[in-house]
Image 1 (cartoon, one colour):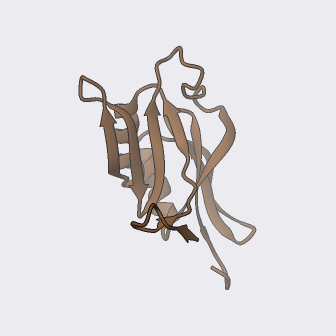
Image 2 (cartoon, rainbow, N blue to C red):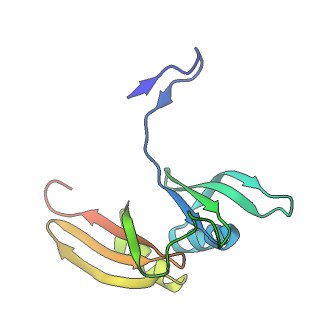
Length: 140
């Protein structure tokens, strides 16, 4: 679905997570190393550190916001998972799972087959949980 944007380029409807973290630069560096994320947009503070960054993994976008420790939206405690879980669907989840763990993610659930999916879950260093998966079987 798309809508016209003031007579210019159509805007495609999408939903992208916005992750609050305590160290934006560390988060950008981690997501690059763990998931091969590329920066699509970045707003820096006066010291050149990212305040907001839009990252993409093979075209799938998510946002990272640097929040100070005392902010009510700062990242959740490491490993707690919180009420939202990211699902990152990729062609080779085993490779990306290993890459994420090597970059510093904590294993929550090892890679396994479950209900027609190859899936594993990691917690990033900022407390957000990521299910890395690929649908298996005839409807993949």
